[in-house]
Image 1 (cartoon, rainbow, N blue to C red):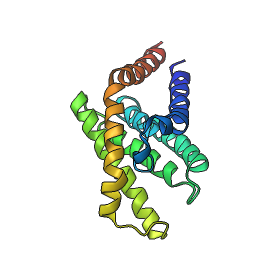
Image 2 (tube, rainbow, N blue to C red; image 1 turned 180 degrees about the vertical axis):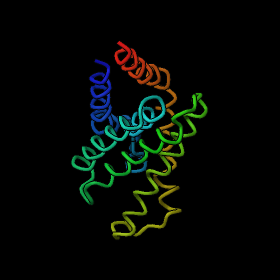
Image 3 (cartoon, rainbow, N blue to C red; image 1 turned 90 degrees about the horizontal axis):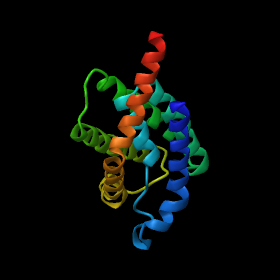
Image 4 (cartoon, one colour; image 1 turned 120 degrees about the vertical axis):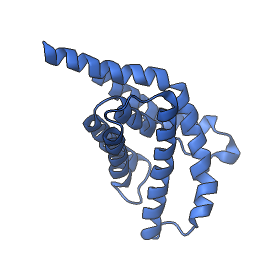
Amino acid sequence: MSMNRIILLMVLLFIIEGAVMPWIIPAGFGHRIIPHFVFVIVIFSGLYSKRHLALLLGVSFGMLHDVVYFGHLLGINAFIMGLMGYYTGVLLERRRSTIMMAISVIGFACILYDSVIYFIYSVFRITNESYAWALIDHILPSLFLQLAFALACYVPARRLFEGQTKAKAEKDEE
């Protein structure tokens, strides 16, 4: 039942990213602040659940992002979201992460996510801007939105993913 809640939450966040957030973000920052709420939940799943779940969620919702929002190169968001979720799960598999560690990992992952997308776009000459411009123009402003969202949903996301892991462990013991 908890996996259904996770998928429903991520679909809801996906809709909020595309339908509600453009109305909330001020007009001057509309092209600069790009919400990645689904990516934050993928990183939470890597931190507090299994790494394979993070990979699955990242690839599926990343492909959804590719198809709906970004038509330049299909598969980039799916590949990067899945890879970042999986590596987060691998790197912090045995550690108990605190709120500061979780926010730091999410911040680093968001910067890495946007930077890798920028570099792939520059390799295929979809963008001609410099990395310094991209960092100042949209990577760092978007980072602050992702960190505020991660801080606001830290406790519910942690309970959701840890509860899903504990329920599966109890079911396996029976």
